[in-house]
Length: 178
Image 1: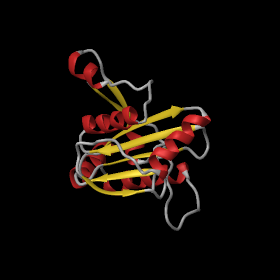
Image 2 (image 1 turned 45 degrees about the horizontal axis):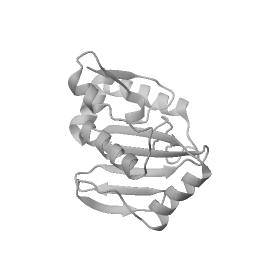
Image 3 (image 1 turned 180 degrees about the horizontal axis):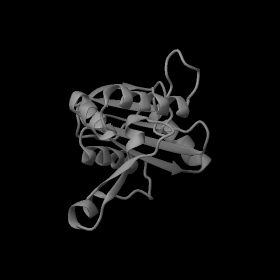
Image 4 (image 1 turned 90 degrees about the vertical axis):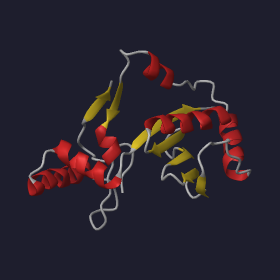
């Protein structure tokens, strides 16, 4: 299993994340297959489809935390979303699975006073849109959309961490969308 910070846990290894071990597995994969990392990434995308992750963090007061907790986890209210919902899990926050294979989760950090919203979709605009849907629903005034800038300004580009997508801890790679 992996997480957005690049942490990777491997069954049968240790009960925790190990970035050095994950990096050696990546190097082994390159050595055994004889492929460049870019080709391995392309092969993964061809086999499993494109994955676009959007992540947002929000600081708040204890009063706001209590309000969000009540809304999402006690009353189990959700924003109006235009994607068809497959199922909802409240195991670790509020996670909505969509029939298109994507998902979004709003969960409180266990280490910081933050609400984290993560969304994974096949289309990056869907991921941004679903995060914004949750932001508006939770009344987050700091929220803003980057989609208009991507569509209107040719000089704007987005940097993405390749390692977060494929949970390659200990290795920092990235790419730009222009």
